[in-house]
Image 1 (tube, rainbow, N blue to C red):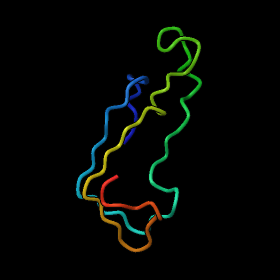
Image 2 (cartoon, one colour):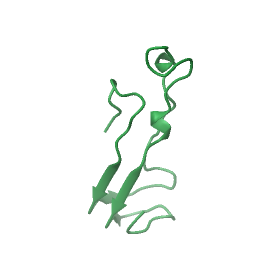
Image 3 (cartoon, one colour):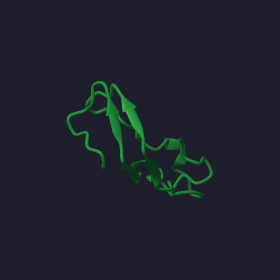
Length: 77
């Protein structure tokens, strides 16, 4: 999953159903990065990078954990 390079200011909601995670450590689930400086241009987002990577919504339903799991692990989060 990645951000569409032609829509740097939009990230669609990601939905996951019946997902199984195996041996997940605390703090490890997704990498949400800082917007690249190149996104700061007048044609796209003005003088600052678009913030789409920081506006990410992920929905997990009926999640299962196998092996080690983070302390926050629940079946829906």
